[in-house]
Length: 222
Image (cartoon, rainbow, N blue to C red; front, side, top):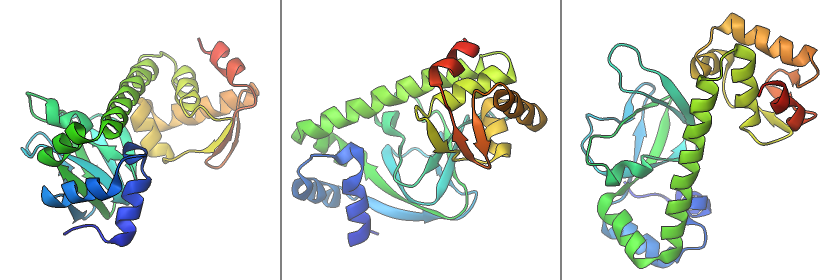
């Protein structure tokens, strides 16, 4: 089904579409069969087995991104509402490299390959936004590699917290999910939080995190 009026407003408010010709873009998206789809908890939104070339935007709910390894899937990141996914999917000669699975009920808007190519060819602002998003994903993956290979639990956690680039924020994931994301045990993660708090590098109140001095946190775990 096509997005409703409220969903169109959410779509146009996303950075990927900032500054584009909305009337022209909506006509392109409608013409090329872009639709919304609802998913139940655990359902797959995108995977190597789904051979559709498309981009998704999560409109409601959450999802996980994991590796497709049959033995042990590795959690790569979480998706929340308003986040695009599968951006590089259109230009891969190989199947999509991740599995995106609903974390609770969610709803997504899917852009077909034809629609995205038409937007890229007709709207230079969208082209720049698209390239900017891809660049951001590359930076994120570099950070991900950094804190997965960082060594100690404290260093992995410190690098992860610094990736928020904010002095104060709320964690967008549970301790269990964060331990999977950083590939460390829950007990080790709790001890790492305690250590960073004891050293005065962070302040923690539930999921609320405050970093008094970002430079000090990074220097402590270079």
